[in-house]
Image 1 (tube, helix red, strand yellow):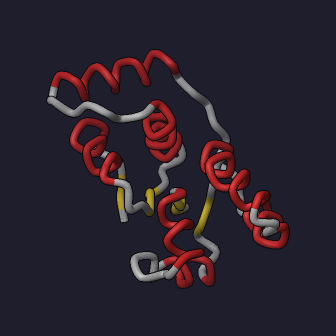
Image 2: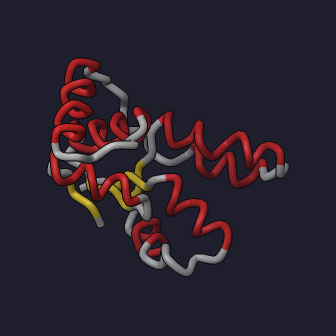
Length: 125
């Protein structure tokens, strides 16, 4: 089962690795995946820092195709709001939908995904 590695994990991994200790094992076991949203969150900063090798390595990670169902995103946001869960950004909703569509776990430090999980029942590490 693929593991969609959220940008929060990558950021921790690049900085200190204190909270992303499982990532090395997931990489070794060839379980990690990404999508265009996560890459779009990471690559601009890496380009500014001239981390071209890191960018190339990230771009080699298997991509989960984004098949955005906008009506389901709207419904998910409505259901979150009905449960008192606000402040969830559209990118996080799309990432959660992407993981669910691909039967993938999400490896994240972002509390938004734990909130989304109360509505969508995604698989979190």
